[in-house]
Length: 362
Image (cartoon, rainbow, N blue to C red):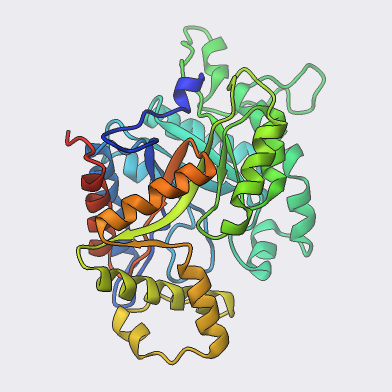
């Protein structure tokens, strides 16, 4: 694993590499099968147009988000793509045993050598009750507090380098480096690079201290973006992985040919978020349902605040918004997530953004 496995190259007129974050959203009237077919279509488009990587996020107990099992989805996407990097954005490590994640991503690396990223978060990706069910504990926050120790354990399994005397020394994540030490074994040249994900300063500081790449969730924590990136850069210590900081930010962006249609789509996405935040998660509503919905004053305030951080409009408007955001944050990479009711709108948005930046067609 080298910095080349992490750093991308900008394409076309884009100021930095562009990537995709897929929430595998399910709209009203659609199914999870429809959403996963859309994911395949977007991943193939992203690969053909020069997007650098394609990540899938872990969420649970949300009818409108069909990405509860990132490793399963990534295996499916690996079978339908050839070059684009695939990864988790991220796996919520406290929900899992580190050995299981090392095995899953070792398997993915064997399926798609040199193309797998392992992005890790410490949030549950769900509500407290679901987190307790996932983590088999009545105090899921205590598990999250152990994230640095879990990360260290996972890294040991990925590198197969527990020290002598450690109780896990005889245990090996397979596929993994141990296979090279067996008679006739050959060492794989690749190991999934670990990224830390965050929406506050905790993971920013930890990523900096460990010299790891960092991904910040600007798409739902915009007020913390610049402070977190500053903290990451200030605390960064060079490592075997990176000599200099490398930070990407997740950005919610939606391009349509008609500006009014973009506003209709993001209004529906905002209504979906209101329902989620109020404990009523559901499928992404149609724009027509959102237009007919009577927002309360507090809901209107939330929707306006939420959509202020969604870059939307015509392709030229979205390109200008992305350029401005990159200049303000100094992000090394922009990872775009498109939230809309239908897969067709999401797919078209990525195509329009690619055209706006004159990304190559391969």
